[in-house]
Structure formats: C-alpha cells, structure tokens
Length: 275
Length: 90
Ligand SMILES: Nc1ncnc2c1ncn2[C@@H]1O[C@H](COP(=O)(O)OP(=O)(O)O)[C@@H](O)[C@H]1O
Ligand SMILES: [Mg+2]
Image 1 (cartoon, rainbow over the protein chains, first blue to last red):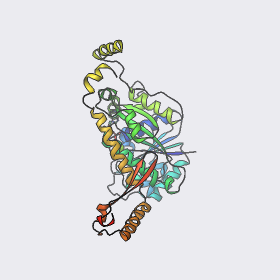
Image 2 (image 1 turned 90 degrees about the vertical axis):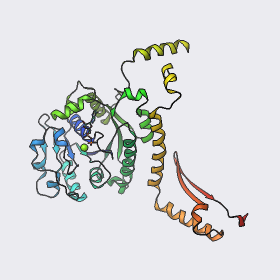
Image 3 (image 1 turned 90 degrees about the horizontal axis):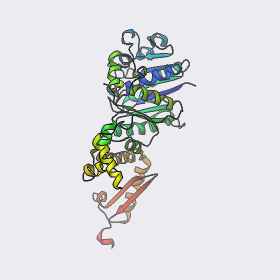
Image 4 (image 1 turned 30 degrees about the horizontal axis):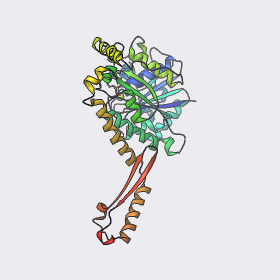
C-alpha cells in the first residue's frame, strides 16, 4: 500500500526540503519506489537540492491543470532507478492548486509508488494545507529554537484537525518528530534547547536527530542529497531516521559531544572523587 | 551534575531552560485556545446569562466579576468559574 508522507514544520528554513530530499533518497536506496513532490509553488527548490533543475519541463501545477500528463512531469533521478521528483511550478498564482486536482495526482502516484513524499512550503496557509491534507504520516521538522518549536506545535494541531483523515474521522495521521540542525556542544553549554526539552514540549515520537553539519551545504552545492554522503554525520543520521521510519530500532547518534574538554574532564574526576 | 555545572550554571538559569519554560507556557495556552470548541464558548455565554439573571451585575461589569476559563492540565481540561458576588448578596 502506497503511503503519503508530508514533511512539514510551519516555520521556514528549518530543513524541510533538505529532509525531503534526504529521506526520499534513503527510501529509494532501500529499494522502495519513491517520489518526492515539491509543494512549494512559486519557490521551487527541491529540484536544485536533488540536482535535476535542468531537466524540469512540466511541473505539479501543469499536471493538476491537465496541461501535461503525470509521466511527462516526473523526473527520474540520475543515480537511482526508483527515485523520482515532481517539481513545483514557479507561478506566482496562489490559487494554482486545488484539493480535488491534487487528490487526483496523488491517487495516480499511489498506483506506481510505495512512498509519496510531500515537501511542504512554510506557513499554515493554502500551500501548506495542500501538502498535508492527504497525508498518512507526517514528519515534523523542528529546530532547537523557540519559534520553530512553537510553529511545530501549531502544525500538529492542524494535522489533528484539518487533514483529510481528521475530517473523515479516520485513524489520525502518524506523527514523527525530526529534530534538525542540532548542536550537542551548544546544548551541553545550555545555549540550545535539548532533545529532551523538545520531546517534552511536542510529545510526539522521535524519528531522528540531524546534527548541524557542513555536509548539508556541500550536498546542496552539488545537488546530491546528503544521504549519498555516507561518510558524513548528517548522511548517517538521515539513514538512521529512515531505518526507524521503516520500523527498526536504531539508537540515536550525534546527540552528545564526543570528547569532553580537558577542563571538563579534570573537574568531572575531582567531582567524582569528592562525591 | 558535575562540578563545572555547579560552578558556572547554578546561580543563573541557562538560556535553554528559559526557552523551555516560555515555550511550556505559550504552547499550553495556544493548545487550549485551539481546542476550545464552539460548544465551550456557547456554554460560557449561557453561564454568564444565568448569572446575570440571579445576580444584579451590570452587563458591562459582568466580564470583570465573572471569569470563565478553560485550562488544560495534563490529560484533562478544567472549566474554572470565578464569580465575585456583589455586596448586596452577602
Ligand atoms: N543539518 C543541517 N546542517 C546545516 N545546515 C542545514 C541543515 N539542515 C538544513 N540546513 C540549511 O538550512 C537552510 C534551509 O534548509 P531547507 O531545507 O531549504 O529548509 P526549508 O525547506 O524548511 O525552508 C539551507 O541553507 C540548508 O542548507
Ligand atoms: Mg523548502
């Protein structure tokens, strides 16, 4: 059975597109037929992150408006047989998408894909609603920062009340928390909300923690999703998250600093002696 | 807690813990507001009108003397009713 997954957050710039590309790539690496759909109409970017920007001919809006067939708009990944991108359009028309049209496209995608990943635009307006409305599962991308956590909570409220599943009173959307741009060093210094803090506040199951990583910018520079960089911390963290998404138990990594500073070790051992 | 924590942190809360406290308050407030269905609002209005029927509170004062709040505490919601009785009643 095909599953529709929305990658959402409320706030912009937290890592939705990075995560959509990385998770889509990871699911395809695991052998699933996967399509990543860019719902950020007007601000198309997923194509750049996935390195297929020069092959965009038709887009989601063309398909919804029946100006192109779905298979004409789908772009096959250069590296993976079973990975596809459905780009967003660059139109500034806010009403370019409508629910009925989007539903038709999603239903058609369901017949040939295992996973349909919807990369949501920021905000809680129409575009974000379109991306989340048909979801079976939601990945809520959150940064360890006050406005991101608050916006994630708003989005959780919307998932629970405004989605198709909610309106039809079916089993609710399965929610997953993905914390990105996490810095264990800053958390240990007390400058950044910790993982426990965020889990406490949002109270949904944790899918993964992606560290703040230089590999992400490198990946976007070259248009190769960070999941391919399996040497990198972020690449490994995304692969772990995918394993968990598929139901495997994998311990969290990159959530503590590896080495304690000399000073800290010194004090720590003294403290242990005296206690 | 290590000694270094005691030395540098105890006297001043970290900015992360301030952030968490602020978020706890605003999130619980916003969840209450969002989950407050129209039914509760109607009930509030009716409670106010019943009170106005029995107590002589001018309608422009009623908002100050009668406070109806719905608050979420953990698993359940609490409907809190605070009525300041006018002197004539006591
Ligand atoms: N784990 C990370 N480490 C470092 N930079 C990141 C990380 N995740 C995302 N970024 C950067 O943050 C910015 C916003 O990411 P993006 O995925 O476009 O967010 P969104 O789609 O939510 O607006 C980009 O410049 C991206 O490279
Ligand atoms: Mg984006």
